[in-house]
Image (cartoon, rainbow over all chains, first blue to last red; front, top):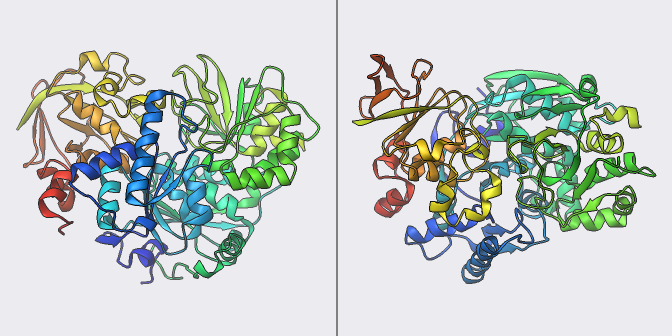
Length: 411
Length: 164
């Protein structure tokens, strides 16, 4: 039998336990301090590969309080001493920076952050782990992995206008459930992939973990190659695809043309409905950004809908570009000006309001339409707040009306 | 043999229930962080839990973030093991890595407050209160060895590397 993408990258059959080399290991400001303490507790002094090790200050950046400032200082000092890569406040969200400049097809990536799976869009076996695993990977340059069984998502067709990658992944999670792919890989294939941009692939891979998946993998194809070339990393491309006769646990077929704007309702990502079914649901905040949907294509979609309009007077609009590069490009393209003219508050690149630390914390009883990946109770502030997840198109349309709105109505 | 009382929780307990992001500033102060353990799932959890208790949950326990602080504060609160119908992947690995056993079994018939006896070697859970016995799923060999050493850091300290 042929091999799945996961079996190809890890070079073993599903179910095997392997000791794998690690091509990149990283941690961020909420998991990094414990990673460093576990590294030190283990008695390690040196990194296996300083140039394949990165620390990101993104979750609370710039720091909102003294204890987090102390954590940031610890990370900076460690980076200086160990000579690893460090991306300081304002650089952007770790997963976006990994996508832009570090990950490549065939890599094995360990990150102390569950959304490390984002880099699967480039054909990298990228998975989230805790601080102890990251600490050992820092020191030894390897980790142990169970080669996962794979679920194939076979896509055909093309998205309708105002329907995005976010709607596809929310649809899939709604179908298989928040534990539908636990311990498994989601692998995307089919002729419809040629209609899914790199930006949308990052959104989709990013949220594969919300179905429990260990990794969300795309083959490396022409779109991957063009993306890497545009980043000046064309030489890092290699073609990668699953064998035609690879064995999957199951196959789910999706025709992109049948998808509609989709929203996950509180407090679970698999609690999905169509945006049009939620018409009339009032929201006090719209948040556009994060590793899920803070890329140029996302800001372009939002700016396109908000151009010449204002956000609803009872709905705040907050935008956090996923990286400094995204911010610069969005400025050049005029999207930032459009968003500001629509009344948006622009945050520095980073995780922003996503995890309830700062930059848009929700009050009790408030509802937010967010382009992020989790709507868990208490995630964005008060445990009595309500989070709805949707695409940048749905978010922008909803910001104008002050209630959840199908973006096709705004176009 | 571990003996203790069951603290029952529902399905889909997330890492945000266990330690919400709003306490991220306490992540380098674990004793303070532990005072908020499971606050958004069961507000009185931290005052109710006694050393030796078991968390008995439904399906998909620990979904969400990779924060190792989640199993750490559960362990610090005195919990000896987590029993659940199913567990999210990263939480499972993190729990084993910090020496907190996670046992997959059908928890439906265990009630809050039941007295339990857990035999890790035999793979059994006895519910003394309702005279029910359960078996739990096998933990992969490499994880058992990590657990035997008390977690990944002591394991690597002892062996210097992964041993398959």
